[in-house]
Length: 310
Image (cartoon, rainbow, N blue to C red; front, side, top):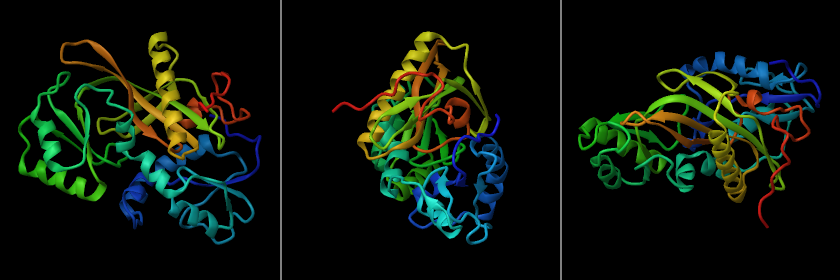
């Protein structure tokens, strides 16, 4: 995607490890995480940054972005501190407690389950009770930590057969992050997504539907426009994204967001829609594919901005 050149020069921190920081009150990225992020940061910079923008990281000299507006993949405390150290002026953004709330899987679950039998368990006994049941649409469960990225912090568990290692995973995850998401481990047919932007006054716009390609571990590989999706699926995903936008603003969030979704095959072979698998209250790897950042607060579908009910 061509770089954008129609706005003020900006300093960016592409902290793709934001979920790890939000999960921990004290965080510094390990060398392994920095190395794993590096190629993805380079790819994201190609689509998200304009030709005169500055990429700020731990190696950026002080004052290297002096006077520039500062933005981040997710404006966590660490990202904002990097911008300030580089001399940038961070753009207005929600506070860290809001970011922590809306990026956790508990927030997504609070909008209601969208897979049969899915639940967010806040203690080990509750989790084990859920795991004792047999999923109606899959052979086993998939347990996810409250925060995660690129498929990290997930564990498949067979119904009624939680091992001691599984129980240890549950105990550690719940103690560290307040709960775990338990979902049927369904066979994904196609991954989809909708991106949008919420203004500080609560108005929002949605971008076009995109297809997302991930590897077997859930790590992002690429994003492309999804032009061949049935209109009923498109409408359902747009409706769900509108609902998410309202909930995010009600929770105190504004800024970029994305809703991940997918088509899956159930145990009987039928293809079904999961309209909301994850909520990303931040930028994402495919954001610039799905949302036209050159538009005046607008989006590629050219629909009028929605506004929250008064």
